[in-house]
Image (cartoon, rainbow, N blue to C red; front, top):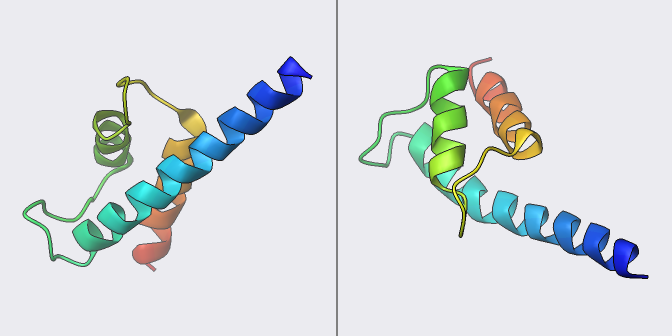
Length: 75
């Protein structure tokens, strides 16, 4: 039971982080932010790490989500 809860909790919190960061990402990529739009995957990775709530750590799933969005905006 505890393992299932931890798995659900982790998945739920990742979705919350992605939802929270999506708005910021869209504002940056639209040019309506003080930050210039991202051009490289490294910029996206660094931004994801610095905008993680609580602890500043790298999360590959979240980074991959936003890197895919970066590439889809450059089409």
